[in-house]
Amino acid sequence: MSTVSKTLATDGSEQPSHLEIPDEETPRYSKRETLLTMIGVLLVMLLASLDQMIVSTAMPRIIAEFNGLDRFTWVTTAYLLTSTVMIPIYGKLSDIFGRKPIFLIGVVLFLIGSAACGAAQDMNQLIIFRGFQGFGAAALMPIALAVIGDLFTPRERGKWQGITGAVFGLSSVLGPAVGGWFTDNLTWRWIFYVNLPVGIAALLVLTLLMPNLRSKVTNARIDYLGAILLAVAVVPLMLGFTWAGSQYDWISPQTLGLFGGSLIAFVLFFVYEAFLERHDRQPIIDPSLFKNKVFTVSILITMITSMAMFGSIAFIPLFAQGILGISATNAGFLLSPMMFALILGSVLSGQLVSRFGKYKWIAIAGMFISAGGSFLLLRLNVASAQSDLWLAMIVMGVGMGFGMAVYTVVIQNALPKKIGQATSAMTFFRQIGATIALSAMGSILTGAYVPVFQSSLSPQVKEFAATIQQQTHQDILKAFENPNILLSPEIQTDMTQKFQQFPNGMQIYGQLVDAVKQGLAQGLHDVFIISVSLLLIGLIVVLFLKELPLRGRGPDKKKTTEEQIAEEIEEAINPSLIH
Image 1 (cartoon, rainbow, N blue to C red):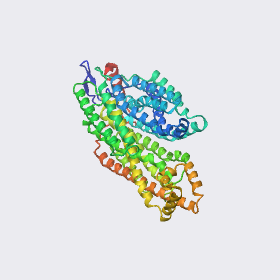
Image 2 (image 1 turned 90 degrees about the horizontal axis):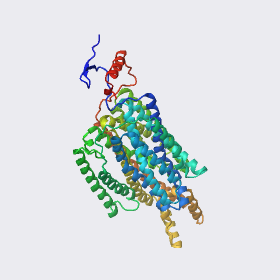
Image 3 (image 1 turned 90 degrees about the vertical axis):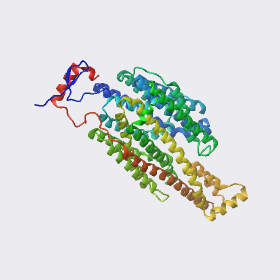
Image 4 (image 1 turned 30 degrees about the vertical axis):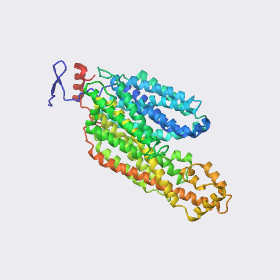
């Protein structure tokens, strides 16, 4: 006969304790509450990720209507600035006041911003409204991930985090297609209006059916000064990386001033946050989080992989259109193999984490596969076929999917009482990493392109260009010193008409296009070298990730009759231990 061990309940009496008693970070909710809440959460996540993918498709039409080519980058920049600043703030507020009110506030702000963007009458209004939309968007993804942490045990979270990764992949496929259809068949304004019915449905589900997920914090304080310091630190950092290499040189006074000001503000922010934490006054980000090695290593890996992967993804369509000659419309669907592979990898890794309760080997495998995909990208050149690109994307997609499902589970398992700010910190650093990568890799591409383009020009082309310049005082080579000529059918048509006027003009034009492809291929090769290097560093760092047991029961493990009876007795005698 088995022995049932005893423990002291809160009233001092002895209670059976051989069964797993849920603790405060694994609350119980009915299946109905859980499933309906997850429907609302997944709708919100689809809303947030779809919005990031769908807007870029309509930007050419918006620029044409508002005559806003000089300000079009600010449509994205304003959104990134506000959302990045607010991510850790929302995470901390959700830890203090509970997930539900902060989540609902974020959804409402996002929907108001979406409606305003759809109604914008000029470029300046659109920029302002996109910034407002970013204030709401910042709450959507990190708090959605935190809600999953509240609803499920760490071991159960794996499969749900895998599903959230699949949502991201699905939005990457649907976004360009939906955005293009709305823009071509209705109006670009519907790329914003489409958020309203989906968002309202999610809002109703969450308002009526989502449990309160109340916080246990009693001395709630809002860190206003910390929020200001964080904004002062993040805004110049984002602007610096956005403008560096395009509007200003990397070592220009403007760029260095932005980076220097951001560094000073970050130092002041963390000094002040450490002061608040010592006095138990609820800082936005507890500096002590970084004393947890699992958290620190996970954040570092997340930032490295974000820089490597999202930087690479951003330049794959450029290779497809510029080198392979795929049309812009088809290039929008070119990422589909990668995203379907990402969905597969995300769901599979989530199921593996949930089943085996281990994550380190999955994290290592994901990083190794991602590095393999990056090596395949590195092999691409002007002679590559579309199948070469597909193979590289599929391999990288599987690796990305493995990584996306793991680290949220790892961080939440390591810091169960700080799920909100830990999850938002991960999202915050991931977004910072992606921004750094896009700007830095863009500068690397530009720096490598021009020298290779110039060296690839034949003496015949140079002689032709010099002759034309003497006759018309125009430097025709200037038009080819930007690889965008390969991306615009309009520019190519115009240049073809001009070169047809000269003897051997089309032959010279073909040689110029070949030189452009050589320069672009070398620039992209240098970008992919950075990606491979980062992933190799990540592969080393992931080896230092500590394996902590994932609390909770595996999906293949059934409760014995004795455990079920003991659990019912435990809940009847002392429900406070569970609830």
